[in-house]
Length: 293
Image (cartoon, rainbow, N blue to C red; front, side, top):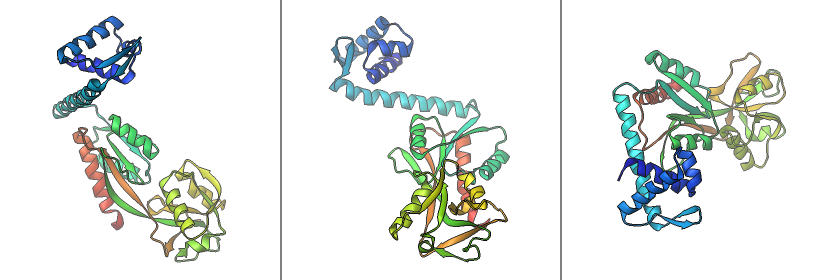
């Protein structure tokens, strides 16, 4: 049994079409068909049911596919590990975030330690991050909320209180704290539903009988402070995302433990480079000392 046979089999099993698989693998259909035929002869069983030009993975094929994918996965992990040990790994750390407010400070600390390593950061929705982690296209993620997936390791590195941001001159600006009930008739600016902080705040408000009234909903959390300062509306903003402006006051919420959980994610079974492991340590150390900053 050859490695090439496994690679060809997995692609045919994925597409269940010889022509499309051959095109994807950049080989001729006859060469691909012969390779699959030799594999079936080696195994002593057919892996596909033939229906014209289409193939359908049968019971033998389904079972063998699971083993073949695991075998190729382990070989790829071994290759990555050897490259890392030889210091020949690609010098770019791939990151994805939904909770980005403290990322500049974290990246600055990482660069002090590893100035030779570059990084590429993507701002993504949680599910998009999970897909890229599963594919091995990103090394680590900072996510709020955490992720509960079988193959994804998710550790909470910080619990971040949600505050109410109001402009100077607002009738609540001088308050030391405010209850959610007092916000029932306020106008809000916020990100769209689906973002962790927005969903948390909306859920807390619904639990006491009202739905926040939004006059602005966007995709850029960093823009909210400017909108609050311009007196367009007030906002729910995590404490780590505070923008120190003279015309904004941040008020703790009383009566509700409203906080977002920031989690660090990585794939349980994929190899993590030395650079990724060092970045993981910096993230955990940074947030461990966040309350003292």
